[in-house]
Image 1 (cartoon, rainbow, N blue to C red):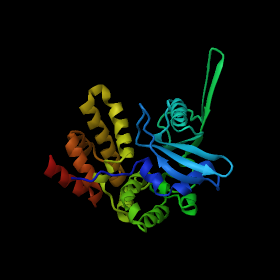
Image 2: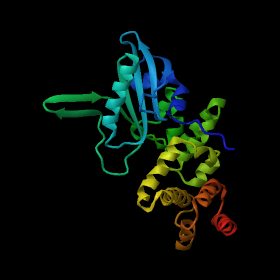
Image 3: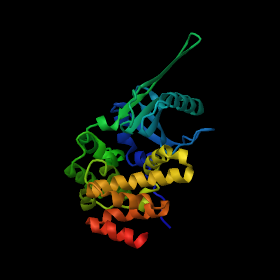
Length: 293
């Protein structure tokens, strides 16, 4: 049985909480005391990370970290609710942080606060906004931000083979970080050709499928096809991801090959996703399709 990957937000931040809290608050004297449970009465998310922190000036306070694959217009309201729930539960002031991993796929204004006016009453919740594609990859190495190592390929100036290799080397210096290689490979596939990704690191699709980031991208495809039904929506998500990886690996595919992939079941698409980065030429794909369809 495949071991469930523990590469959600809490796992990533727990790798170097001291460096993380200094970075998100931009306060060098902030100390991470402990990672708290962020499961409120009706809120439970894998990528919500609540840290109890301390600074000589502010005393004890909470840092609420919300890691999102992509920004949506619902997030300002969510940040307001989470910050209030955290403060109410622990009786401490809260410093909310929203980290967006990938740029939005549609045109949307990314806001750094929640604002509303109801019957003359003003409501406002500020939060620290961090868009990873605007963060220079160099600071990951300079500040030992191990939580960001898997995201290096999508950071500013991070989409180069030499920088990805540097991130991989750093992951491999610590046994606790090895499990993050597949996540690094996944995000590297957004900016590098798949043969380059295959050459510089190990790709473990079986482990990666348990990652909340993979599941989030899969849900995007499911939503696009949900009018076709849940099963067809999942199939659409798998198909979209596999075709993207194949295009990265081999460039343009013939209409015949695309048609063959589009007829695969969810199980076959999952199997192809695990096998494709072992392919060295297009004939390997043709052979796989002959043997598995």
